[in-house]
Length: 88
Image 1 (cartoon, helix red, strand yellow):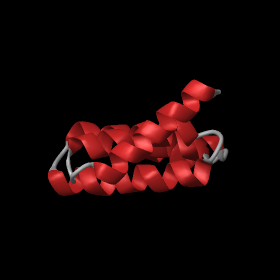
Image 2 (cartoon, helix red, strand yellow):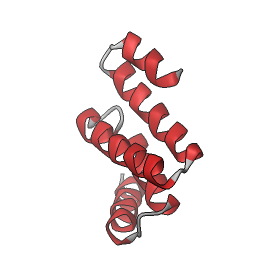
Image 3 (cartoon, one colour):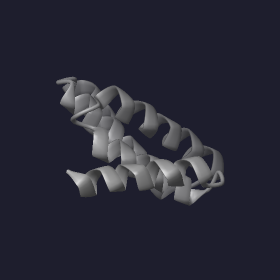
Image 4 (cartoon, one colour):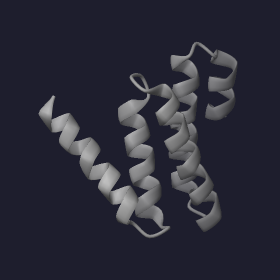
């Protein structure tokens, strides 16, 4: 609905305007979570971007969050082995 669209817009704006920091990682992971079942390809791309940035800046919690989103994307595609790999 309308509030979901507002959240998506807010997250996209945050991603566009944020520096390469934990806020950007969190926004990428959050938007990936929004899309993980409806736009799985987009969610995976966002989670991979977040993971790369989290690794670059040493943000372990962000790495875990992005890996979790990648695991859920794999699960949504019925790729259970890859899902497990992302969650371990």
